[in-house]
Length: 292
Ligand code: ATR
Image 1 (cartoon, rainbow, N blue to C red):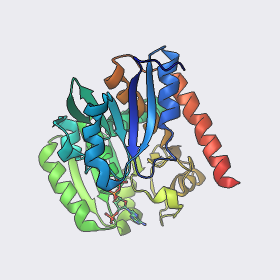
Image 2: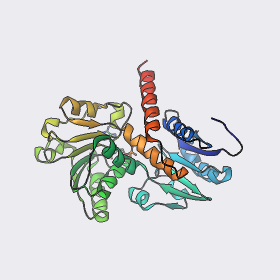
Image 3: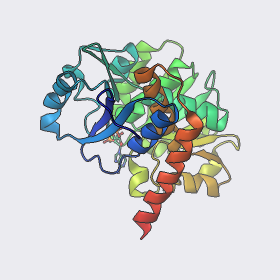
Image 4: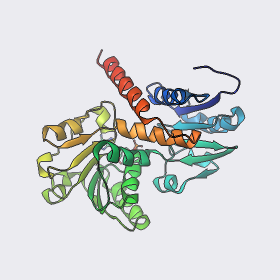
């Protein structure tokens, strides 16, 4: 990689940011297309976010990703956000378009692309259950609704939050039926047997907690997905696999959200195969480091 006076700067704002796999993935993509860009990690504390966002124009940075804990709090500092990011209420990508800062959400589209590309799943007319009602779950649920999923059950630890989300999205997406259910309904056979897709959109995979779920209640064709990518086989997915169900981890969502962001910033088609290869290698290294 050759840095010159014309190198354009991209990056990621997070706190912490040191575990991010995005710089490896994005720099490999930029380099493979011979683009004179660099993608850097920036550790930005929550109280410094506004200054950091203002610095995009000061320093001529042409785009950044946002990760924990900035995806929602960044919105007031932007000039514009897409309709999709507005509905979801979270922004993971800023595009600096000639000084105007535009917020996008590519997590949602990334999740949907991963379902299609990695598992051949088409949401149209299907029934899904999503655990979670936070920022990540909103992206997953909005993505499914945009692709005309027929029905979504929302199970959340704090049930009122799930109920509020079901009501809010019910008003926004006419083609989909939203039903909030208590976590105890995860063992309700009439709900479980109706599922085509079962998603964990909480951060629990990271902690390794196993939900009390009997995957034997789900149809054998159900696709079980976890948005967490570290570990790739979360406790939730492991249990689903032991029950003989097809599973999909969160690495694909990370890959495709990055690919969509790349295309927003560069107007070039993202080199998916190269990005995927780097991510798989990095994820393996991260796992080895964690194990040692
Ligand atoms: P994110 O942006 O990752 O979605 P978030 O907006 O803080 O983060 O949402 C976290 C989600 O994980 C919520 O749905 C949360 O449930 P509550 O709304 O009840 O807080 C869920 N979650 C986190 N830890 C959990 C746990 N140990 N058990 C059950 N749900 C959990």
